[in-house]
Structures are given as structure tokens and as C-alpha cells.
Image 1: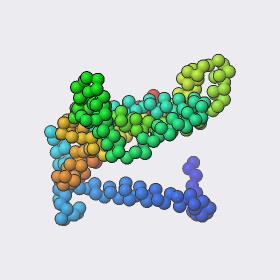
Image 2: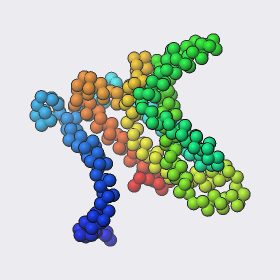
Image 3: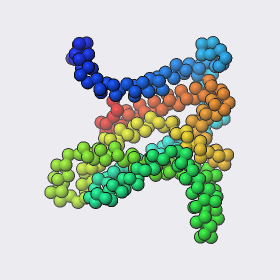
Image 4: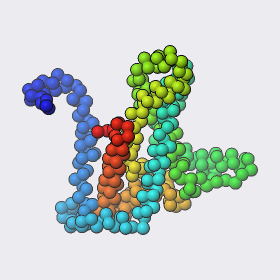
Length: 306
């Protein structure tokens, strides 16, 4: 039977812990202003939106812009690139934070542990512009890597102009930037494992690799599955900024994704209805994919978001 809190008790609870509720005000306001309020504008995805007449003055167009997007010349390329980059990032980026967290957890030299944490966490706090600037300095035709190749007698390679290399450069630079920070949650999961399990395994004669395999990995597996489900929700939400900054006419066939297409349609061509329809399509497909992954995870491992 569901337990209900009497109004008087709820008021007393809020007054008793008013500081905690006050801390919730700004995050809640941010969610309302930036996540829920903009949903009012989703109606223009179903209208021939004209800024001069506003939301309600524009005529309904039904699913015209959704159909236009799906039937467009760019649709196969956008889906292929977006899903390809997203899956590449998810699969390649799954193990590095786990390996780093386990290595840090097993490190008994405090100075080395602190140094590795500081070095691996630092790239996360660099802005996307700085990261792309570093990549350009390293990978341009006159960059450090090509200078080294020429020194060895090789021919310079246009790394950023090669469409075949774009996904790998994007993904692995992202792994370099985010692995250290992503390992924090796995370190927290490892800290939550009962120390008695480690002690029992040690007494039974298990070496360090056996303790990692039979104690540490099962202990962090539920956390890894939850994070994988959450990442699956962004299957079509590849970050716009980094792709846009790395994009050029030579790698456009591999770098053109839904986010950059939405930017061109909405802010460059000012086709707001089409841009909104594409954004809504992106969100709905991502949500459905998350439901599927969550259902599969629940059936196979009994771990899920709900």
C-alpha cells in the first residue's frame, strides 16, 4: 500500500531541511528554463513557420518537414556518419576508464597515483576550441607529426583532410580528453566494494589478476551497464562543437552529422521548421534506442535504469 505524507508533515519536513531544498532551486530552474520551456517551440516542426506571424499565425504543415528530411539526399550520409561516430565512441571508450580506474585502485604509491590522476583529469577541463587547436597544430600539413614524418623521409599526410581518418581522430582525441574524468565514477564504484571480499580472495590465494577478475569487475559491472544505457540515449546526439570545428570541405563526407545539418538548416538557411523537425526526430530515435538497450540489459543482466 502506497504511503502518503500528510500536508502538515511535508511542510514541517521542508522547513526543517530548507537549506537542502534551497540548493535544488537553481538546478530545477535550469531544467525548466532550458529543457522544458523550449518544448513550446516544437510546434513549428509541424508548421510552415514564418517569424513575422509567430507560432500561432503560421499554418500547419503536418509531417511535411519530417518527410522532407527522410527523403533528402543527405539523410543516408547523416545517419551513417552520426551513428558510426556514436557507436565508435561508445565501443572504443567503454574500456579505457575501467582499466584506468582499476589501475589507480591497485596503485599503492600515493605520489604516483595522485600524479596520474592529475595528468589524466586535466584534458577534460580544456575547452573544445583548445582541443581542436591542439589537434590542428599536431596534424596539419605543417604540424608536428608531419614534421616528424618528413624528418624520417616520409611524405606528409593530410590527416584532417582525409575523410577516412576523421572518425578515428575525433573518437580517440575524445577518449584522451575524457578517460581520466570518466574513471572517477568507476573509482567510486570500486570504493563501494566490500573490503572483506578482497581479504577473503587474498586469503584463498587469489593473485592480483584473479582478484580484479572475480571481485573488482563484478563489483563495477552494474555501474558500467548503467553508463552504457545512458550513453546509448545519445546515439544520435554527437557533440556539435568539436565536429563543426574539425569539419572542412575535404572531410565533409565523413564529418557531416545531424547536428551540423541542423545548424546549417536553422541558422544559416533559416529554415526553422525543418531544423526543428530534424531535432525532434533525433530526440525521438535516441529515446527509442535507449528503451531498447535498457530492455535488453534488464533481460540479460537484471541491471537497468527502471
